[in-house]
Image 1 (spheres, rainbow, N blue to C red):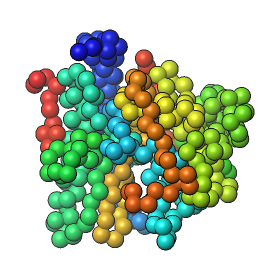
Image 2: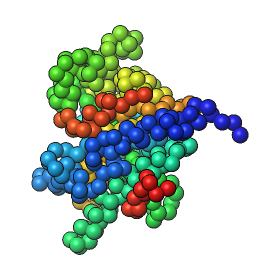
Image 3: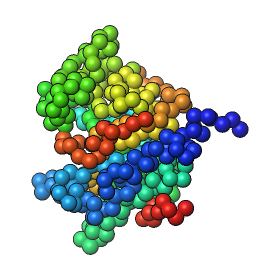
Length: 349
């Protein structure tokens, strides 16, 4: 069997994977998802107007932000990294188009590293355990209230058996499309930069077409014509004023990755570190738990082939289914360099 030298170097003591785990362990208590404890480090907070949940830090009441890691999994596992994202397109008789009002997010399914060292394995399993603690606690609360809800978790199983420990963590990006003037206000609060450095997103730029987008600096509040995504186009997409947003997705050198490079940079097998917030949304008898990524940092690029894009010419595929404040999690991501079901102790294996 051939051995991938780069992968071997990452797995050995002192390699990249060991360095990633050490960075997570060095974070303040409760910031790393695998080391956080629900109700000790963070608690749920109900929006009295919507009934939805957010999660806040127990000590100071600010929105809880966490850092997690995982390897991007292929599309069959739940990854939806394309122009359509998580949008439900409806049916042939009742299509649901993507217009200026549509809230479209990309989705990344994160899993255990294919060739993971022991510490990385434990770290990922503990992330699953923390998320599951929240679900189990909420289920017990529903039982006490004699309520029955259909729950969609932020984790997923590899097969049809839903009784065991989940294998995947599902992460949503921020919205892909937004109207520039509206999004500009929200982004300016997210990216409060006292040094006024353009690379950190302190000014707004509309790069327009593919020909000139490499001429302007890439910033987190840059807007693009959606057509720079190779699979954007057809009857599904009916934007008028909305543009494609530059998300905070960074390469191993912490440089922002422009949208035209997202598909190649976040291909299956890529190890990423994510800064995210936790949410739960209620609709009648349904509750959806969601991890929203505000920063995605590539730690180890993948050499696997890029999955082919949809072959549907009009974008329809019927039958398929941040916080603005500075935080420990945000600071941690800025410094990144190059199952309870039962929580595992790093010193027990």
